[in-house]
Image (tube, rainbow, N blue to C red; front, side, top):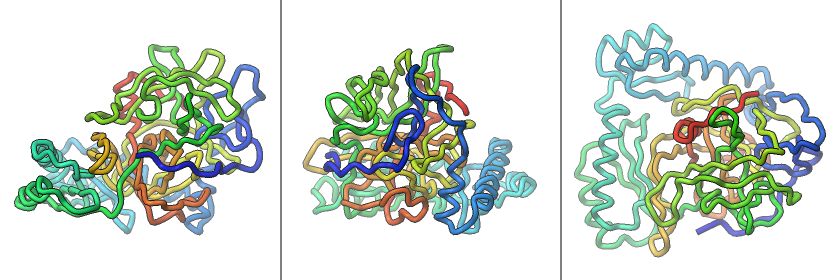
Length: 401
């Protein structure tokens, strides 16, 4: 089930080479277009306003998160089993020994002894997914680890539970470390049927542009949500100018799949190493990562513009669609508190200047994120495809700014 059409939301003034009301990211410039302005890190301006602080203070906060995340990466093989930011912006790491706890403290991290941890939760997720598949129930909406609580969360579709689901829930509740809850809304991919928007996919489905890169040394491509380029559509901009063509997708409607895909950029266009903040500014892409749970993250999309939040979970399995319709089980997704709407799919998620992923989907409950609301677009959530996994699978090197 896809979101219904929405009125186009535009941006005052020209945005890079793509014109008025350009897409979530504007990495494509035709050979004959005007020069692209030097990129600036507009993420700090928008985020600062939504936090009620100056751009400089917003940068300090984000830099602090990235410093702690980098410290974790250097020592996580020393028995550190997952990490997340708490409400005080401390990076909490799971440990199973006094030695690992000492390593964490030496790096300025906060150790926490846990019963399970990230690796055990991943094994538990595999076990629970197998039970869900065997049950034949179509009412499991998502399965994923919640690091702060050190438990596995199973979320069901809204509505009356079938006999198969009732039996499955009884099994799941008997497993230590598993929580079962019911959502109040269904989920949907965030592509919209709105003509004339950026990343207009012939014959009419609409998404947002993701991250540019190269593969095989010189082939210019763009990483996208897989459902945006399923079937290898031709891709054009708002003005109807061709940008390229979908060439690969791991998303299969109605089948277990992954939501990553690839668009080939035409030779007369150039992939750029920055994204459009939708506020007249751009943000450089200086690298990519899977930032720790709790990290600040923002997304650019052609429907809602610039919205921000924090990373909630990784490695989620999500079932898009209701119990009575076509269900597509999508694995390997991350969840965030970032607000998205129809047409934002494929749009770029970034933490500071470090790429994180592309919009996959979210709740289909009629929520309104507003436009360019930063962290003030609250009360919703979204799923995204981590860019690190997509780049690794397709052999893509991101274009940096």
